[in-house]
Amino acid sequence: MSTLQDKLAELSSDRRIDVMARADELIAEELTLRQLREALDLTQSVIAERLEIGQHSVSRMENRGDIKLSTLRTYIEALGGELNITAKFPDRDEVRIQPAEVA
Image (cartoon, rainbow, N blue to C red; front, side):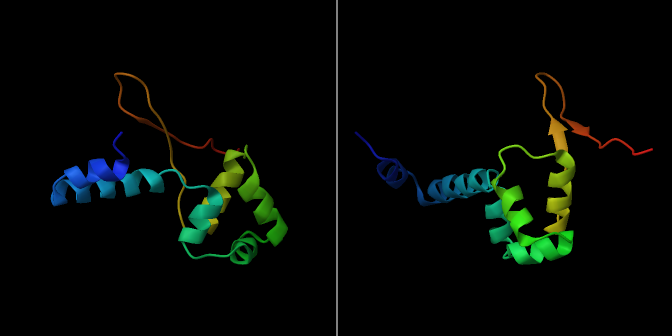
């Protein structure tokens, strides 16, 4: 039985680099909020200060399995980012979902 390392060793150097780069991209696409914050070298205390909430609230946010979009948006903005949501359908281009205007 071949291992992943065996299969990678069979590839050319250029192809192995391409495969590993794509693997890194896929891993980056699947970060938790905590992992994203840590990758940006930010602490829960810094995020709490930016959101004007307690550090324990940041911890709870990061550990929730279900989070409101508005909460996620403010968390991402506190990280210095922008949240974009897209919907994918078969045989159609992606559609970007815009937040509703508050009246």
